[in-house]
Image (cartoon, rainbow, N blue to C red; front, side, top):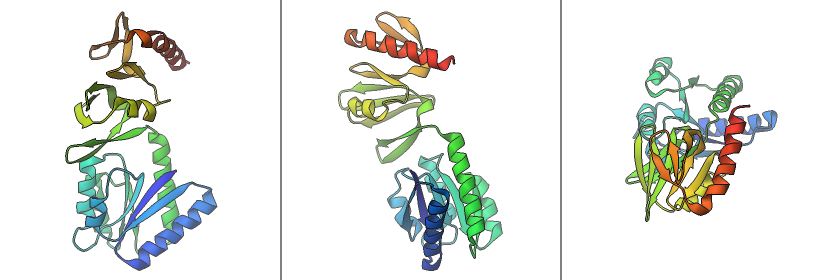
Length: 236
């Protein structure tokens, strides 16, 4: 399911975009769901990296679209942004926030469809999985390929990533369920590793790219079987 946000203060245009999404969904047999926001403040207040594509009006009261995009990029580098505008010169500034494209008002279905297809193609290319992590003061959207391992220290969780450690709270068991089938394995009550970064076994430790982690005795057989299969799949 592709999740789309429409951030547009003019009723005429957000109703038109909803109609275009309905047509596109039926015409392309594409699973889509969408939400409507009528001002930038409202959108930012409810933003938790939950969307794949955002159609964002540049000229809005209170908080303009460019400012909204800048706020989004502070917590989400991956969501696709397509600006809606009646002035090309505003849209051109979109490179600063890595906008995919823009749609000019008045909007026609052909232009909308072209941009949406382009966005879906980019999603297919990215196709990396993400998880959303609650952190103090907000949320972080983390790409799984950037995650080495998760460490549990009581009620605190430490996400060891290529960019450093992200601190959160919760249960590691939750992520064991969330990441099932995504190349992660819980090797110990306090550690879950990304199999792509496992370099070997130095019993009773798992040798990671950056460190060695303890392996639970009862986890050993299942982990070795899973790791052997993973390495075999990677070599195909």
